[in-house]
Length: 631
Image 1 (cartoon, helix red, strand yellow):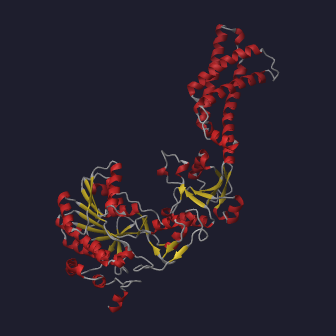
Image 2 (cartoon, rainbow, N blue to C red):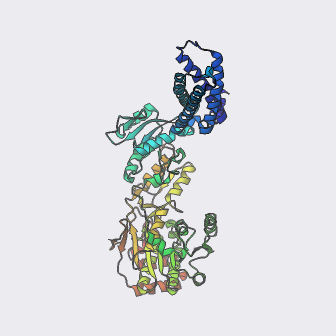
Image 3 (cartoon, helix red, strand yellow):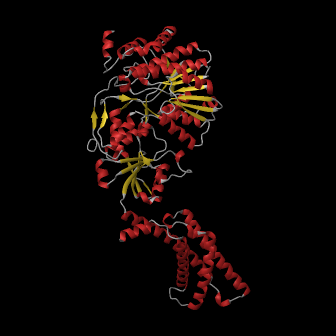
């Protein structure tokens, strides 16, 4: 009962009028103390005069505090501004009393009522001291009681610079988190063993398991504004190994009105641990190229297509035509844009495989730029359905390419994948054929410029490993990894889409754009990090199960095909792949033949035809490996 009473009392702000009354009482108390000090604590003065003077003190003090509003501050959050208001209020009060006493002496209004100048001065000093100290005493009392009544989180702040100090202040202001900052961590040897607000700064090398257990540390907050991704990964891996909960302070640009709030400190997530600097593209040319243009996005409801649509909605496009055959996701995107106040778009349920319907859309809306993101991309599923992979990834692309040339589209940009490089599966081979068809068409088109963007796995996209791991963690595990050594390149969805939009402004046409994605990451290591970032332990809480490579899957992905190398662009992270020479006329004729008769072929015949079109396509862990042995 007592505990609950304190919790309820402490979680409510004291009424400003209660604070006002207490301040008046303290002013009166200070006045009595001033008289006691002036007369050597003997109280050798006329108390009747003191009482009459106290009435004046109450009136003047009340007016002063009401004018300044010093009683309105929240006591448990007392800061320098509150202290200054108290100082100003008491100063105005003392100056008013002094002025009244001078006027009283000059005009002899009431000679028996005079307050000695020494009393006024002593009272001023005592009042300032008592009112300020009372606030800090209550604040300290609240902090002690609130932390004793609730669980305490012993934490360290990594970074003893400006950001770390601001983080410390934000946590002190926010008592609901019940943080007890045990110390700071910093790599600067000049700071180590020094103190900030009585909090010691430790060397990172001294943060050991024994240190953590001894001081009952459970959390570390990383508060460094400019930290290299490789350094962040190194720090996080060490802290995770110590079974610590790791949080991170957001960039300065995301602080609310330039101020950090405690609730902005978030759990570090896997996107923060890509081990590479984020790719930032801020090109005004992109805006100029899409403003007042009619833009068509295929696959608009997918992970990449929807983000492209969101980013386009930030510009002043004349119209954005959103195409997808998935009705429900397209509806969700439509509602999202409407809620954001976007009106310059139209959402159409349609399939890139239906050339007749797509032709009608091109004729009706007359798009000037096309972003082609529609594709089947799940490797195991496409390994079982070559027919669908060809129909969507190859012939769907062919439909849009041919219609773009026919309608003299300015720019056509296709979203491809690193799995198209030296493909080992049907999905990758189908995307490679699409790349080659675009390359051939680019050479034969005078009006339309064609561009291909090629990148690795996208964090958080539909079917990617991150959402799968999250679901498996929610279900209690185990996490499934196909091979302990399997690696992949990763990027975020906004990065991928920024690259696609950027590619829509670059080059003369026919280029394949790739970019520096940093190091490839072991999926097994990602799985372990995600377990720890979820507050669990591997393998005690959740295990990782090795399931073996899936059909068509390979251990290592590549961004360049055999015979390709790169040319630099104006952006240090973006490169152009120098493509192989192919017989354009022969290749296009083969695709034309495929589009006429592919529905009569079985899976073996379809894949055999794909291998003829893409000689580097060698199946791996697949039923189609026999076709490679025959050839």
